[in-house]
Image 1: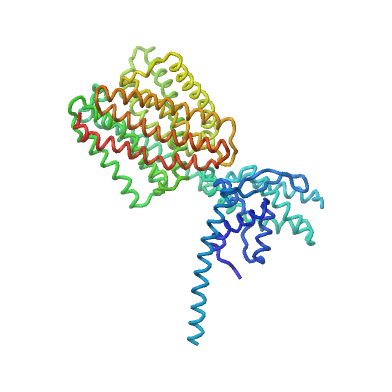
Image 2: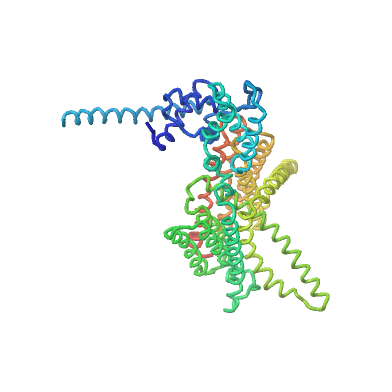
Length: 117
Length: 455
């Protein structure tokens, strides 16, 4: 299944923030976690994650620090800030509304389809 | 797993290619490289050989052109360098040439336009009073051309072009129909404020109609600051040119002074605005290195100046003498400080944590705030003693506008310094405040004459 570009773009922010709410992480690991969570269905070009992370940083939702990777190279780690947590909770509520609305309409329309047949 | 020599070379080549993309800065490239290496390593662990792992990893990262576009979108301050998105090669060269021709053409047109009224008997050397045609109309020999240049360059739509023209038409009508009653204070005030109002109108063309977008507004602020620096440089050079001209012609017994005053100077003054606006974008890399250095140089100096001034006031107990010239001087000083503040905010990388320079900047804001309060106090004192006059009310309004801006800037900057918030609110506050200046400038132009009965 191919998830449309707009939907991926819209869900990327809460997804990344939710992953960071589990603990600080770095780009590659975040991408991997997205893959795991969605069973590989939600995909974007790996590089696109970084402009997104930087935007979150600029808005004060995440904080970045340079640390070391296991091989000793510099690696940038991201951590969710308190402001980020608030924003995540806010976005969560929005998604829940969308989700329940869709569920509602889909239940009725499935019934209609079934009755029609 | 150790990376092999060949793979290491490949990654270095890739990195070198990445570094050519100006929208992706070196720290970002480092982050991407870390990603690439992790990916290659994982792929190697599942059995791909180096070549395969490298190619898959590069492919998954995404093609670099769209990636750098994405980076540029996030970092609009880099996008505005227009290096990533502008087409490379011949097309870029011919674009640059066309820009140059149009800009120089408009500069010449502006230079000619300022001489045209002389054909109808108006004279540049008329006394500086409210009846002077040139004082009333000075903006119209420059800013319409500049607005036209950006409307052309950005490919502004037809409807937006009409919107762009409206303020200019209104301004031209008002400036020429205002009766000069009494001492003509309101006309002079309008003449001072109309360039501000119209400069912000040019911003509408510069941002291609997207004036509500905060990043675009910031770009215009940055542009204004850099244009100012280019203009000053050109003016300095122009001064040397004029002096040389007078000197050499003097040596053969010809007096070139009149030619310099009635031709070179006025045409140069208006034409240079277009040339510097064009240069800001055409020779971006020069100015973007120079301007931040100047800001860093002058922020501490202005801070010292304001602190020394405040210190002297406290020590000597003297109060600000609020004559007309002093009023204008104070407003100019505060506007300069605000400009410095705005520009350094616009070039600051919002990601960097607070540093020494931010403390200085904060000091500058706070000392300007105190100076502004002193000036306000002196003005209200003066008003309560002698009553309202257009000049005093204009000064009062401007100082109040600055007070609000500086006060809230100080609060936001303080929060940023204490690491209680990101830098973005500081930026946002400035860009949100820009319409206030426009509103005030138009208010002075359009309503002051009515309120003060054309004094």
